[in-house]
Length: 277
Image 1 (tube, rainbow, N blue to C red):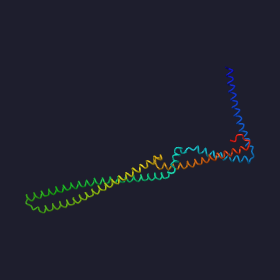
Image 2: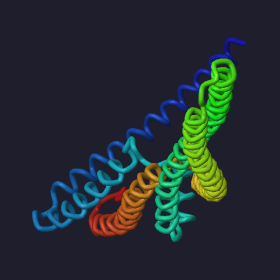
Image 3: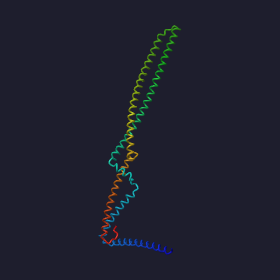
Image 4: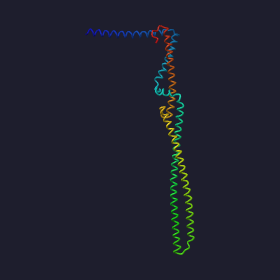
């Protein structure tokens, strides 16, 4: 058993030595390649340095893009890319709908205030009509009292109450005439207020329908583009354009990288470089 264990240990040690020898050979080859490049004539070395520096700059651009923290997520980017042809029109439509929503809300508030004003005026007019009816009853009662008093004076004291009757009737007639005129004016104004209220209710219903339709349109657009308002969509459009430009630059950098890698590899292949890659 000890012999078998020794053989296993020997085999493991042999594999480790072979691995170390392989790594040593690669490192030695890299060092040899580096010495070979350093020993090149300055003109040829400059050509290689230019290609290498270009490749280094491209790789730096690539790393800068990949390390950006505010990059647009792929899910959002590809969703925006899919709808790119309609984004401008959708943003304009969303802004118009939001402005229209604000105007409609203001109209509804104004109509609501007018409706309250008409309701208050109508209540006020009904109060005036009730007061006029009460005043008419008072005047009639006063006239009857005056007539009774004059009759008592006439029959008990044998006084001539003709003038008194005349004055009482004239005053009562004038008072009742004024009350009737005011009562009819108030009644006509009640009818005008009621007609205005009806027109206002019809207009309010039309505006409410517009508000509902506009709200449904906004909700549809918000759901379709997965935003809360037009400002968010506008910001996303701006970010999308920046991201699109950055990704195009990244794609160009990738293409240039392949070109310069190939160019540099071919240049190094002209010399005694074992691992140009």
